[in-house]
Image 1 (cartoon, rainbow, N blue to C red):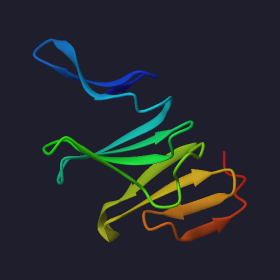
Image 2: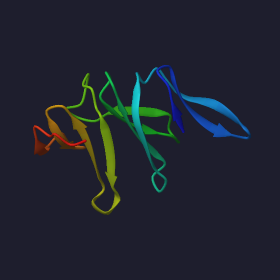
Image 3: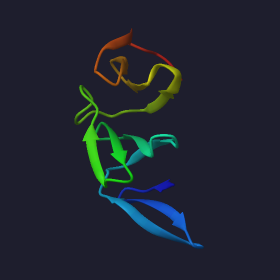
Image 4: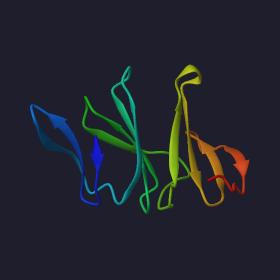
Length: 103
């Protein structure tokens, strides 16, 4: 998967095909292969969970319109974490670290 400011592309059959249009500027992509989900962090559209099989996207609570610098999965706990300037939050919008200065 490759993200640009216009699309997220998937490499299939020796070429790139658009998968998701207009996600915003992508800052990170993580694939959950087991559930066929993409976790996407963006510069101005928050964090998004994209269901590849269904072709649907869902905003992660509390991230709407924010600059999400990074996103990570915790498959053992069925959770994800995203980092914004205000701190680190889980997929339900619960604060994990306040005022993060993580690099």
